[in-house]
Length: 170
Image (cartoon, rainbow, N blue to C red; front, top):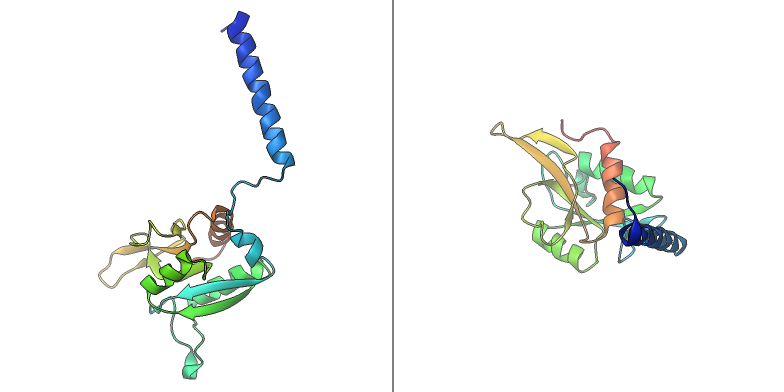
């Protein structure tokens, strides 16, 4: 297909404009994906604020009343925090309360054996399922974690970590 005349000139002008725009954005330090609230930058080398709901096989209460959560999902989150040079702090609570804290920017991550059928999909960023487990009735459950809505760089970093990590509960 041959482009000539005005149509070809407009196409070349459009392409040149797009190249200039892309270079200008790259020069401005625009990052894609982005975190409007800077979650990844804040957590990296700092504190990862984690909310967990108790769920046998994922998150359980600490031994001898230590108050610290433990379990496979806790260990996974601790490894994620370590990969960011961050120290995790824990809030144990009900899912709804934790999601409200996530929405208010008081938490960076919520976990606790949450499935991809989570009712919080309109209030939080949801990871892709990173593992599957068999429920008591024999059905397969796809497990996810929640992040602040729109914090896509943080969500991408978490998903990359989860995809590179041994699966929980399999």
